[in-house]
Amino acid sequence: MFQAVRARLCALTNKARTRRKDAGMVTSEYAMGIVAAVAFAVVLYKVVTSGPVSTALRNIVQQALDGRM
Picture 1: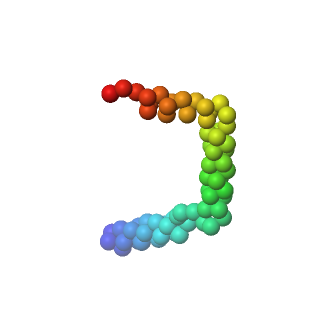
Picture 2 (picture 1 turned 60 degrees about the vertical axis):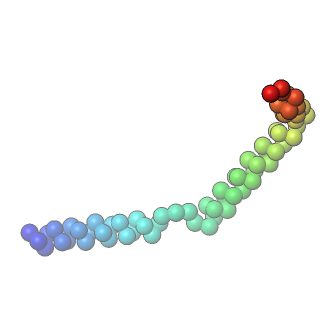
Picture 3 (picture 1 turned 90 degrees about the horizontal axis):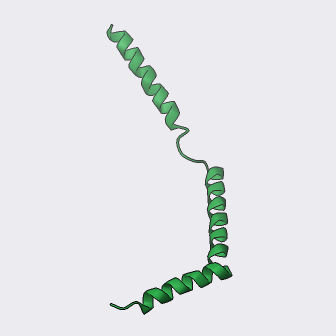
């Protein structure tokens, strides 16, 4: 019985070790993640700096600064 338990434990640890080897992202996945993040940042920058959104943000900040305490 001890040998069966030991064999099962070895099989489980070997299985865990093989899974760990593939954990995380590889360099190409990091590169694609960075490209996606930069693309999202560019789109967000374009939206925030567009005319209507910029005007709305400016009005919000102006109202906040003009508020009375």
